[in-house]
Each structure stands twice: as C-alpha cells, then as structure tokens.
Amino acid sequence: MSRSFMPVPADLEDLPALQLKGLKWTVSHAYNNSLFYRKKLDNFRVSPEMIRSLDDLRRLPFTTAQDLQENYPFPLRAVPFEKIVRVHASSGTTGKRKVLCYTQKDINDWADMFARCFEMAQLSPSDRVQIAVGYGLWTAGVGFQLGCERFGAMAVPVGPANTEMHCQLLEDLQSTVFCSTASMALLMVEEIERRGQRDRLSLKKFIFGAERHSRKMRQRIQEITGAEHLFDIPGLTELYGPGTGLECIAHDGVHYWADYYILEIVNPETLEPVIPGEIGEMVVTSLRKEGSPLIRYRTRDLTRVIPEPCSCGNLLPRHDHILGRSDDMFIFRAVNIYPGQIDHVLSQIPGVGSEYQVHLFRKGDGRDLMLVKVEMLGADSPEFAKDLAEEITSEFRRQIMVRPQVELVGYGTLPRTERKSRRVFDNRAGD
Image (tube, rainbow, N blue to C red; front, side, top):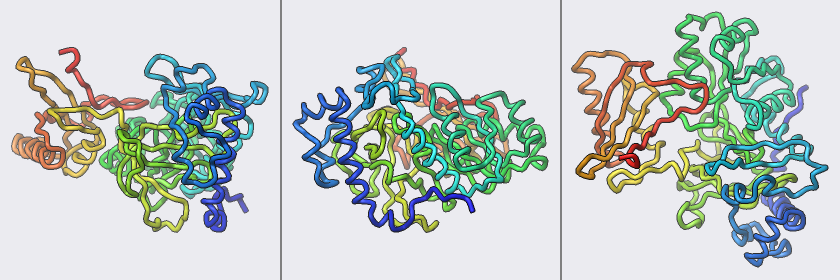
C-alpha cells in the first residue's frame, strides 16, 4: 500500500493548535537567527514571548518583496551557511533576484507537500509525469520532479523543450500527466491537434500553474485532448515553490496546506483583514521553514478564502484560483481593472477563443483608448463577427463599466508561448 501524504482528520481538528505552535516556533527562530527579522521585530516592539494566540499574528509586521531585494543576496537567512543545501531565486523588478535558502528539512517538507498534490490529483505509481517547466534557479522543474519521485510515479523531466520533443515523448513514452504553464499546455494541445495525435496518446491529466488562466483556455485544452482533469497548482518561490496547494477533482478552488503555513487575506490598500469570501491580497506565514522563514509575506496575489466545505470531502481549507496580482491592476478612464476581470467576461461569451490582448493608448486629445484583440471561433461571416464584437463591447460595459474597441482575429493568430503569456500592453507612457 502506498504512503499517504495527507493529514488525517484528527490532525485537522487540532489545526489551530498546530498553527499556533508553528507560529511561535517561526517567530522565535526568525528573531534569534535572522538579523533582518530581529531588526524588523525590534522596530515594531514585538518579541517572541508576545505571541500567545493566533490573534497575535496581527502584531507582526509585513514582509515584502522589496525587503528581499534590498537585503540581497541572503535576505531572510536564519541558519548557518553550513546548513544550507540549496538556493532558489525568482526574478525581481529592480534587477536583483529574490534569493531563498533551503535546509535539507525544507527540501524534505517541500517534497512531501508536492507529493500531497499528486495524491490529491489521484495519481498512482503507474502514472508517467512529463514535466515541461523550467529547471535551474527557478523552483518549478526541480519541485515537480522532487514531488513526483517522493510520490512514486515516473518522472519524465523534459523541461521547456520544443513541441517536437514533447510530442514525440508523449507518444513514445505514453505519458499520462503533463505539467506546465497554462500557456505551454495550450501551445502543446494545439500542436497535438495539428498532428492528429490524440488517439495515439495516453494523456489523462494536466497540472499547470505559474500564471492566471481563463475558463476558455481550460475548455479548449480539454476539448482537444479529452483529458479527464485539469488542475491548477499555486506556486511561490518565497514559500518553497509550487506544490503548496492544489485544485481537487471537484474543481472548486484550491486546497492549501494549512499545516505548513498560515494564509491571510487582506485589503491591499489598508492591509486590514477582509471578510471571509471577499477578494484581497494573499499573505503567508510559514510554520516549519528553517532556511528562509516567512512572516506575513505579502504575495501580491489576489484571491479569496472559500469558507464552505468542499464537495470532494477533503477537510483542508481552500482559496479561490489566483485572480491576478494587486500590482497588475491598470486604470482606464478612472476605472480600476484587473486582467482577471477580462478573463471572466470573455469566458462567458460563446464564439470567443481563449487568447486575447489588451492594448492601451492615449489619443492626442488626452483621452485613453482601449483596444481588445480577441480570437474568434466558429463562423467567420461578417454578420457573426459584427454581432460578436457588439456582444463583447456590451459585456465590457455591463461588467467592467468601460467601452473598448474590439478587433476580432482568426483562431491561432495571437502568439503562443512556452512560458507565461503577456496579455496587457500599456502604451500610454510612451504617448
């Protein structure tokens, strides 16, 4: 019988006590072993002895990406260098990467969390998992491989190679699971369709993350491949990497591993907690992380807690899919818009493909202009195109309260990528 990586129900009944124990340990560990955290906590006049309940979490200061970049190269290090067995890093907007340290215990915990993801996706040791994400300083490739090997399935660690190699290996090795960004998954399935490979493959499941994706994209991937399940996996380099939660087979939000970290949802402007179920910024505090512990780290990811029990029966708590980032917001004619809102609008309209682009311009008279390019499925008659463009414009006005210009293009016209797709192009600064 294979090992289970899920906590038993009794563990979840004691989750608050477990989280409090982990919180006390993290604050004490960070205060006593990290110069950065000691200084920060002293500035806020907080000491480890003051953490007596989970409510005391709000006494603690926030940690930000800027903190990591300003204290480069080992900003949150809380163990001697002799205990660090690996570093990973994500790119930074200032040009300095956010470098995180891992002890062997951190690596083992990460492997267990990722194996839990494969268990939640109902994989078995007979599955063959083709990994199409990047290796190196980025956490994705090695994280997927680590979890796959800990779980006991066959890893096919290809990385973000070309579609030719991936298509060949999907057929020759009969891979059953494909792990990638959502954009890479779309690129691959369209290539599978072009080659007429569907009936020669054993592909049953996709696990993808690293970027927000739309319901239309998921539908398109499933239509082409006939895949049984598509799973969204969150990932944050600062919090181990991908594997800290997974969408379950009920496909109603993402279960997150609350026995490894505390999740808060706060208003990104006031930094106060939002009402359960309300959208806000995800803030995380690690409970077991040795090398680079996190205390109230602002992820900038926008989501909401789903308070109701999940129909899949798993008792681990859930948050919604990542809806965007608080710093992805753009303002158009005094309206705050998140790209996730555009995904939502277009996903509701029949005849629209999964890919789109938003281009923002400033006219000579100072007024802003929004051009939305959308791929069109199905009929391409002038009448159909006219009606579809009008429906898109109408739904933008009704749901987002802006009126864009709409340009319909043929399916496959907009670029595909092996990494993350860029969909918003703000040209107003140049104007």
